[in-house]
Image (tube, rainbow, N blue to C red; front, side, top):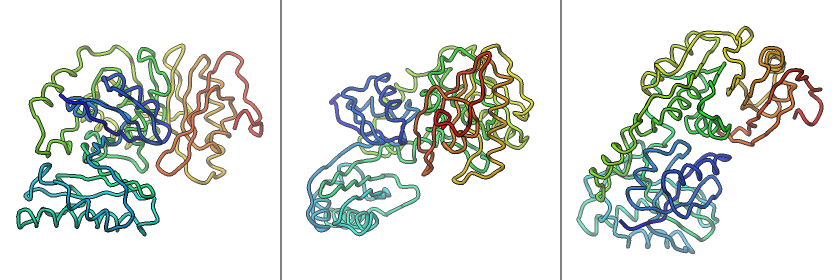
Length: 385
């Protein structure tokens, strides 16, 4: 099968994680971009990327690229493209645009121009047109315009790949599955040491850790991908991938997750069951103030509550986290994601800091290595910031 160039998109800060994942599944010519990674491979690799990648949001397939000098250039090139080779009048489609150009007032205008071109192409060729479905299209087209450079791609994923299919319920501010998987990879967890999430919310970190440790890929749960609606779709090739990547053995690694809220634990258990990993995670209701480590050298990875503004309650809460870690988690490795302002109140010196975007919020993912005699530092000192 012929190789083609693809683009995998991700969250800011996870580009290197995604690049490593792509190398692991056999991608060629892997190059890191901004919130994206470029790679090449055949059709089987395209299917495999959608099925296996944990830190990718979408896999785009470029189908046309050119310079434009006006909105009409976009329309004319779009009308001349052979869309009928990709899908039919009986299918629905949508155009999503990202525009950084003075040629268009907004991305919606660019989307409408390309949509009109596609519709007019079908009308000209067949006397009928496909319908637009902006919420759940059969065919999703990605339009990217940067100054005068235009790239049109087919979105092979459809819905964002963070939608694994196991989140049946959620709490108020659930962590993205892609972010959780990326943080676990960034932490260099060895998949042998017990992983503990003491503020698990709806269970995303624990579920993603269990799936990673046991070789359960996101596609095991998720069944819908946009490429299945393409005329070129080869179901026997996709079935081959499903058979090749089935998990072999259950990992003996322990994963523990707790939360102060009974409702959150109930939600987490429901989601873990949908993901097929409920039996691999020890869930319990517990306040971190009273939670004791279950092993001599614990590995903690968690996502405490935080927001855009720090309140006195937040300061006290993060100070409690620091005190608890210092006095009860000797010899622990601890990773925490939050805002830099909140993490300052922990009062412990991080050994590593990684900048991450959680939605639109700038966050820091920090590693704390605790040992006998660890001291809290002055929260006003720069090394705690």
